[in-house]
Length: 622
Image 1 (cartoon, rainbow, N blue to C red):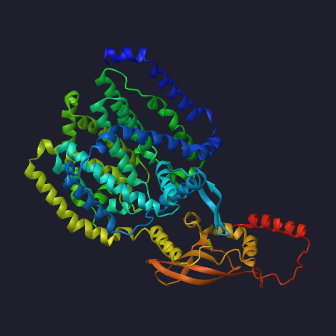
Image 2 (cartoon, helix red, strand yellow; image 1 turned 120 degrees about the vertical axis):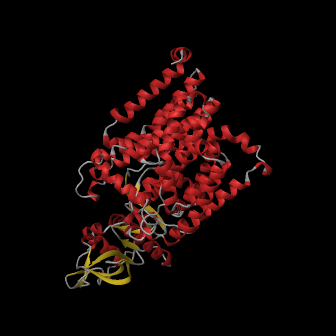
Image 3 (cartoon, rainbow, N blue to C red; image 1 turned 120 degrees about the horizontal axis):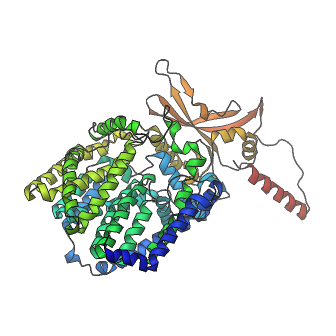
């Protein structure tokens, strides 16, 4: 280490404050706060931690780029790049229907954004009811998913009003931002044509379209990875406080998008140390000193994995007893190749991107060796890409050690998107060393041809999404919601969060069975305009016999009338029924009370009865 830097470390009090900030954050995040209070703390304060970090990040971005934005003129804009990004975004956003694609993540994220909007708390609503036109969240649970994506959706709710579709609005905007960043990275690495090549390669990737039109956090994850890399290059170029603040807070927010994105803090730390080394001094503004304290909610939220064994999802894949193991690598690699080179009807891949990426990776490794030998003389974008290559490799290795790391699985293939980004960066990075301008134009023409002839037809057919039944059932439910003239009905459904997130009263089947008396009370009192139940039947391929899914069985006391049913998958029947009545033996228990009760005339007695009824009404809510 340079002597100047060592001396500045000992002399600069800010380094001591940074060390104290790190130690205090470690104590608070990992040691001093017990598990249950930790979850309560995150639920009540998590929104505010992310808000402060986001405000600092936005301010740092403006200080970095505000002057350039203000000086921007129409004539100085590269309209070819704008056209490429615009066309690429249009291709990705127009061929698939906007909807919730990976239900287990996207609905939970939407529910969390709902509580962040209404109460500024981090909570996934589990019980909620429409009470005389006002929807009230009655109960919820802390979710394991990081907070940055639901936070951004909640900001959209704050500005435009609560709408579940705001998740799609955010991902649509992020698609444009992501392709713009890809274009910028390509231009910095290999020139203008390379920027267009990167955009075109991603525009032809059906998996990206699938997520761009969904409600998940994958697009935000890609944006933050690439934005952090580019901000790292800017830090290495400028070596000033505003660049350091923007870079570090971009990394801080990146770590709060997906669980495994915390891996990218490794290359971030490397770039910070390299910037200090090259500057011969500390670049340590006060926001960066305080940054570790703005991350204490992250390890506290991670306690959910200790409190709930089910959080690892091991139950979804019988036969596994540990979430990570090197023994999974060989099998996962085979599934990864099956995804990258599978048929378009089966997998939302891009054969051209997969082939070029895998060919480019070994040449990129050779390029990295060359860069490392002359790193102090390389361009900032080259140095930043060198460090982030470690992050891409570490993330891929981690996923290959994950028990559910099979890229060809309908739920898991979205996890390959950072690997696709690594492929594209590898392709762009080796172009200046291996390709002439004519070859780059040839690759661009090939990417355009592949997008038109392979990518667009695959996106339009989206056959790869039809095997994921929960996604199709969610779209079917949302179509039912849209057709109802009134939303003051109750839906009995094991996926109750979906309905609650759309501000419709809902309760799980098991809750309905256990609180049958409460449902009888509300049906007698016409609290809800209707009571529906969502159920799924499995169909025997030989006999055609329909068998109700065990968890959907309300029991013989519930008298149902079919409202809508459809075979969304070959051997399943999805049905929504109306609860006509609830019986108690041969008597209809949910019918109106046959006894005429006298009405009190005394105002005080009327008020007492009204309050008693209201208290009982709230207790009986499902």
